[in-house]
Image (cartoon, rainbow, N blue to C red):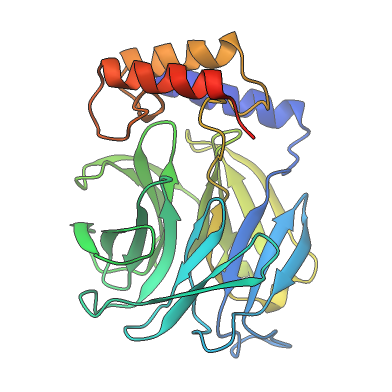
Length: 302
């Protein structure tokens, strides 16, 4: 069984053992909800276990469309429109002060975002995928989809790829960073929004905007694990979405422990030249990565 097949099997096993529970925090961003009956105001929503755990409004003086979201130690957002501002928030939604202007170099509207823990990524209305610094500055084009199509985007920590959800087509797709397509999942509906990967089980979540407030969980292999209507979310036009990028480098299997199992993950990833084996994030696999992992393993996590 190859690494990708093993990953899909593991995701299915984890989901089954957890009773298809969603325990990681899924952050989604809703902007202008004016076209919806009983529409709510612009809002960040944190969904956990099938319900909204907490929510907050955009920081004062920032855009209502902060769909490009990076979620790691803090939450950093970029505005949809050129010249408008996103902000930095703590995990409870309190503004931390910094704001981020949508760069004029990227003229199209940004409609979702993700991070690999070092750089941020976003996709625009023309279907162009951008890489940015952690503060959403210095955007560079990675690739443009074959047809212009509003989409959603998320990073696959395990395989170092990008997943993109289509708005006017019934699919989500996996791409290499040079735009090479890898595989496609047919979701059976258009408006695949707020695409996000839960790094703890390697499953994909999305908002079915064609059935407002309904969210789905998928394996990388294209199996839908659950479809759930979130109470109270049907008035929120969630377009951007992300799970938190892991904060403990040596805990590679994300079980909350640092032990031989993590070393096994590192060795397998290093030999297969997968991102979890590239500890210095320079896209090469050498003794520096081994040294970096040993140092992080010995240091542990706070």
